Each structure stands twice: as structure tokens, then as C-alpha cells.
Amino acid sequence: MRGNLGSGEEEAALSAMASSSDPDKLMSKADKLTKLSFTRWNADWKSATSLYEQAATAYRFRKDNEKAKDAFEKASKGQEMISSPWDAAKHMESAAALAKELGHWNEVSDFYHRASELYRECGRPQPASDALAKGASALEEKSPEEAIKMYDEACSVLEEDGKEHMAFDLYRAAAALYIKMEKYSDAAAFFLRLGSAADKCNAINSQCKAYLSAIIIYLYAHDFQQAQKCYNDCSEVQAFLNSDQNRCATKLLSAYEEGDAEEIKRISQSSAFNHLDHVVIRLARKLPTGDLQAIKKADDGEESLDEDDLT
Image 1 (cartoon, rainbow, N blue to C red):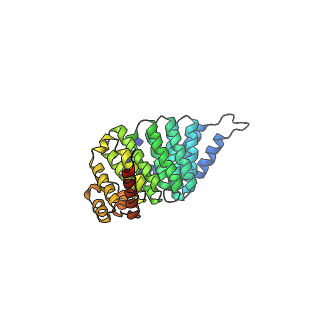
Image 2 (image 1 turned 30 degrees about the vertical axis):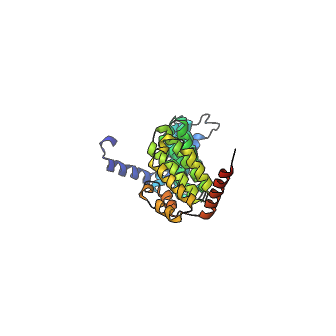
Image 3 (image 1 turned 90 degrees about the vertical axis):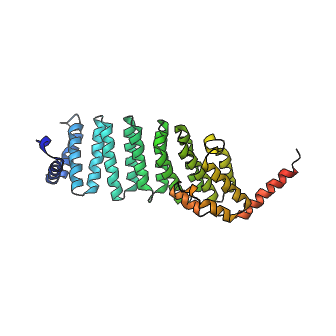
């Protein structure tokens, strides 16, 4: 009969079933099936899991998110007990999404972590990483430190599987969050990590943009020495050395060495920066920051020392 229904009719039928079911009774019956007693020596997880799933659907239809969350969590446990980690992970993600709606932030982290673990049990690194990324995105405002950890883990899952090319957006998201938190060295480090991943994938354009982004972030944070070191290290990579991004960085650092604020502004406003991430463009448009004269004096001092060096 169900095969004769259109998708709209099927959805209506499911809604009718959910609205007519008593989810509390379904949960109670399922709980009894999982408890051992003198008359029940083995838990019937298969039957119980089906009941938990029906209850979860009914609760969600009634917009009782708290009970729906609990039902999905139990349905996940049931799928795990009957050796179906993929379905267990799916239910855990449903519980995590409801925890987000309820503002239960600790549960958001715990549930998405558990979903990720279950996906990895299936040998599926992409959805395992995606689950962590969803958790990170949900937690950016309420718990940025935890969000950063989850972005880091999401990247690591893909790196361990040799799928760095799938992590590019995650590196960028983590770097953007670090910038929002004003942790500029950490943000630059994530762009350098992106550059390294892009190098392995031969994604030269992404690699060069990542390196230039790191240099800009160091300059914005008034750390000229680190920007110079970053530039020198990245220039050892042939792809970056021959790139437009390298030429931009060279001009920018030269203007800093000259203490030429107008030239820095002119370079930072150029179209060469338009293809970087928006968070980096915003920083570039605010350059120069910090004491330019101190940089120039330090640079002049180094040149004087070099002239006197007779060794």
C-alpha cells in the first residue's frame, strides 16, 4: 500500500501516524524491553529501537524537543546494540541538532563527538569530520574554545585519511573564528596548515592565498618579525616564490621596512587582495597598524650592524 503513495501523501501518512501515537507509551514499552528481569533474561534491543524511533518521530512532530532528543539518544544506543553504527550515528546527530535548539551546549559537543566516533567505526571519515564541523559551527558563539577544538579534530580526521582537500573550508572556518577571538598567531597557524594541506593536493592557488593570508595576519597583529619569518619560510616553496601573492607580500613588507604608511595602504587596497577570505581582506584594509617607525628603526639598526660586520 505504501508503495502506491506519492511523497506528499506518504509524508502526510507518517504525520498522521506520529500524531496518533502516544510516544510516552512507546518509550515505556521500549524501556521495558531493554530491562532484564526474572521473566526477561535477554534485552530485545531490535524491537525497543524501533519503538524509540517511532517515539522520537512523534515527539518531534509535537515539537516536544526535550523528549525527542532523549528518544533519539536511546534510538542511537539501540542501533549501536544491534550493530548498526551508521544508523546510530544518524540518530545521535538528530539528538545533537535538538540539543542545539534547546541550548544544551555541553550535549551538543558530546553528541556530535559521539556521532563522529560512530561514523569512524563504519570507516567513514567524511561524515565523521562533518559531524564535528556541525558541532563546531553550532558552538562558535556560545563556546568558541570548544568550537576550535572540534574544527581541529574535524581537520585531523580528514588529514589522517589523506583527504586534506576536503578540509579547506574547515581550516578557513577555524582561522576566521580565531581572528574573531583576536588570537592572531593561532589564526595564522591555521592558514599555514591550510597551505601545507594545499601543497599535498597540488592546489597551488589555495596554497599561495593561505601563505599571503598568514603574512597579513601577522602584520595586522604588529608582529613584523614573524611576518618576515613567515614570508621567508613560505618563499622556500617554489610555487609561492613564483606567485602573484608572493609579489604582493614582497611589496608590502618593503613598504613596512620603509615606514611608508601611504604605500602600505595603497598595496592593501589593491585588487590582488580581493580573492582572499573576507576576514583577511578586512584586516588588510586596516593596515598599517602598530608603530611603523619602530619597525624602520629596527631594520635600519640591523643594516648598520651588517655594515660594521667585518667577519
